[in-house]
Image 1: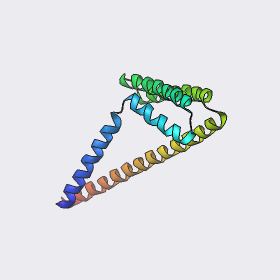
Image 2: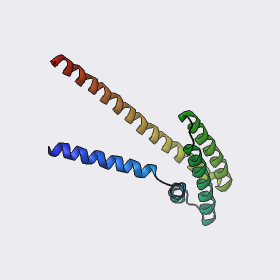
Image 3: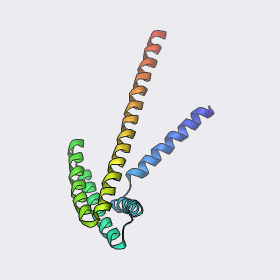
Image 4: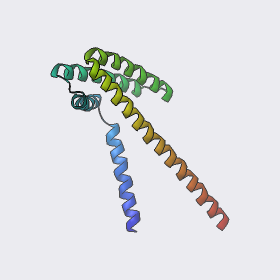
Amino acid sequence: MKKILFLFLISISSLLNAQEKAKKTPEEKAKKKTIEMVSSLKLTKEQDALIYSTNLKVYQSIQKYDTKEHTKKDKKKQKDIAQSLRDKEFKRILTPAQFKLYIALDKADDARKDAVKEAKKKEKKEKKKDDNKTDKKDKKKK
């Protein structure tokens, strides 16, 4: 009984955490991303303001597009376009060394996100496989 309660609480916690993550405003996202960039790229105050402005425009654009009814493929395409424009703007704002580091960090972050997605897919697939085995066992018992 304690295990079931514990698992239930973990599930609720995960759901609430996911909802909080989804509710972030473009301003919050831009601020968080800019703070990360300030520390990793050692931005000047002037760069900080320009980067924040660029990040905010990108996140607002993505949010505006997400609120409309589009397919996942279209949303991904729009996000890629916005990020491409952002990268062009960053190239103008950052020094060549900072931009090179930004690209390297961005690629590493993309690889990390891809690994997480793959792990979740694999976990989902295994859970489905386990569920199917359980269903088969239950049918055999009847």
